[in-house]
Amino acid sequence: MCRKPPGRSFVAINDIEFSEFFASEYARLCWLGCALTGSPAQAEELAQEALVRLWWRWRLVGRPNDPASYARRVLVNRHRSLLRRAAVEARSLARRGPEELALPAGDEQAMVLWQAVQALPVRQRVVLVLRYYEDRTEAEVAQLLGLQVGTVKSRAHRALARLRDQLGSPTLDPAGRPEEGP
Image (cartoon, rainbow, N blue to C red; front, top):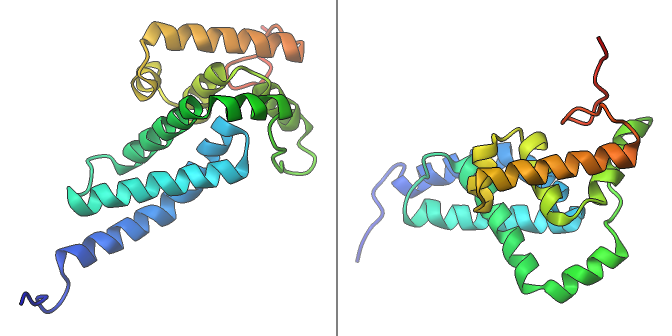
């Protein structure tokens, strides 16, 4: 019979470290999921599933070099997988439209921008969210989505052009703010 050694074991240290990681990253993963799906409920499910998968990897293989990036990648890949497997449901959700996200009171610009972003095609929205909301480089976005860097650039360009058209601002910068004139 194997006995647990007295004091802290390796597993207990990993559990504490993972708990701290969970506390620091859960909300951020939920926001990423919400930006990708437009649904706070789906976002929480994606974040929870990403963290569960990370926890299993942590327990079986050990702590990843960059657990935050690993969790984001799991979340994005899981989102893509759900879209592929549930094509009929995705079309139904697209017809119904995204759920409303509670925005801070009095922030009308953010609400208008949020609605315009939610009207973008999913592929363009995912690129914009990862590129500008998550502040990832084009190379990181390409790696996360399994795309070429040029594809990321073209999707971001098309998405920004659509936002400019929808919002009536030919000088909208990538973060969604009007650019200052000379």
